[in-house]
Image 1 (cartoon, rainbow, N blue to C red):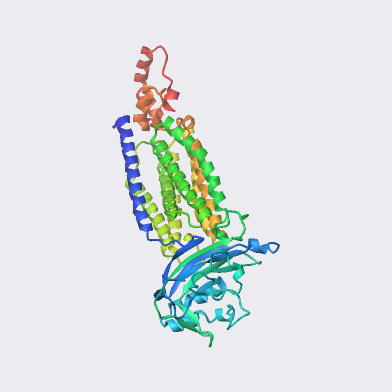
Image 2 (cartoon, rainbow, N blue to C red):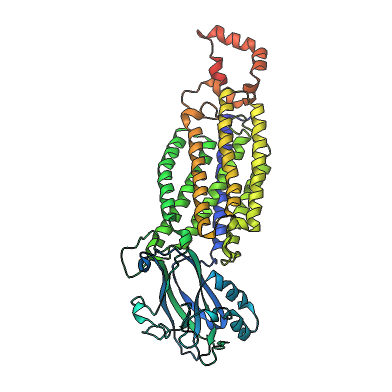
Length: 523
């Protein structure tokens, strides 16, 4: 049988291997995420070639307008769209709510672009303002590019345009918050016939557009909501609250890990630090976003990936403890199966993230758990939960130490809550509007994870865990405890041990002045 030092060396080697695999996964999926196009900024800039025919720019949520202060609580879209070359016909910049956008967007794929322009604007033409064709309509469209150094040609109230910009849309909705969809399309309206036609010439437009909730002409706006789409408002406060929680929890756990060099403690500390680093990166992104409307999307992506690695690491820890590793037994059974399931869960989780960023059409009001990879990971997580309960039951049947059984009861209850919360909130999210869904999922997810980490920190605190951990290092440990740690099966078979080795204990008693404290040795 391997000595205790050899066993600890094996644990450390496995831990190092785990970190190496985690780093490889992290870099792999950072590379995969690099080509992802982000469209969740409130300040968007770029270029567009009219040969592409259609370009979707952004989906942005504007809050409900306060009837008593409509000017300062309305949404504003303003900016500049210019071109380096002259146009025969201007193209169209469209700002539409969902009711008009879906038909417009659905017809963009018609092969005959002349027909596509007619079909896309068939419904919009009956409502959109035009100073010649429909002067009583809504302010949905602009002819672009705008003349350099001047406002757009169809800005009928130039004094309302935000200073230094060429156009301004004021989004006023007294009923409810609403998503608006912004796009460019190579179509123009003939001012004589008022019919729509395709702009069949190539030119490059440059755009610089702001979307904000509040009046940009006043300085009294709230910076924590001004730059954010309605569905992302108030998330900065959420991130700050959990950052403060982890700012207390992480140093406590690092202190505990330094006091007790144990593989379980190290694995849990690694998971907690990964979660804290993820939160720090995301918080930096949203704080910068509140200032400039763009943030640092690379930090947000890295934070999301670290968050996934943290949760998969925590799940691995739960599975290892459920099998009684380092608590009831030193040898881990079915090691290839445990690590294979952990690895597959991590891969599927990150594939879901990449799928949600690249394949899910932003036009659809769905979240990541309403896609087939999302349902797959929920089913996978549920199956792992069932397996976790099965392994925990077997471990508790094998264990007879009262303190360890008490640990497993508390551990099992908290872990079950952590496993089951995701399938429940995924079902609840089906009934929640997309305007509120992100904040709901974010709040519940971070709360459940933070609670799980707090409970685990409590259960693994050195003064408590030394009662049930094998391999726990303590300066007061006797040689007898070392011997029993190397043969943990003896703990669960104490009666047989006592009967077979009574003569050894009797001899030891005759040599020493005091008999050994068997209760202390066993527990």
